[in-house]
Image 1 (cartoon, rainbow, N blue to C red):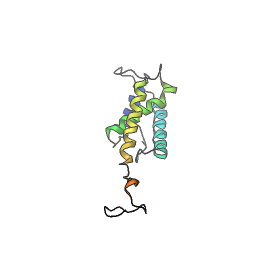
Image 2 (cartoon, rainbow, N blue to C red):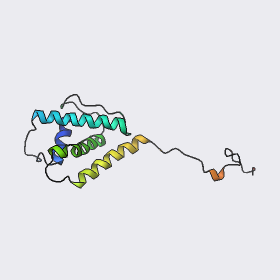
Image 3 (cartoon, rainbow, N blue to C red):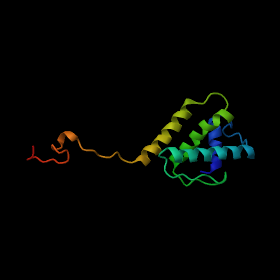
Image 4 (cartoon, one colour):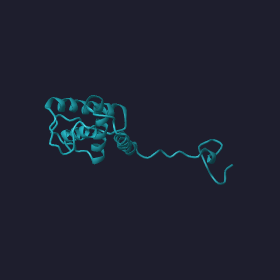
Length: 134
């Protein structure tokens, strides 16, 4: 998915663009949206477990990430763009999908929870266990 496809998808989610109407986004607006997309990516890298994300150098640059990343970018970008470009109220489903897709990525990148022993089964020293020990 290209940066332009992510941006246009986000703009459709906030009703700035109507699906299938052939409307084009002015170059200046695309540049503003690309800047917002890259700012969001940089913020995610600094504050969450999103893994290594690459910012887009141009609107025609393609993402080499999996579909779940593209979905998270599109839906979360819609939330960021809504105050400036959105029409009407933000659909709660957009927010739910944005949170869900980002949460899925963070959970996947977090990895399995570490295994910790049940201290009730440890010996008096707290670090050994044996059936013949008290």
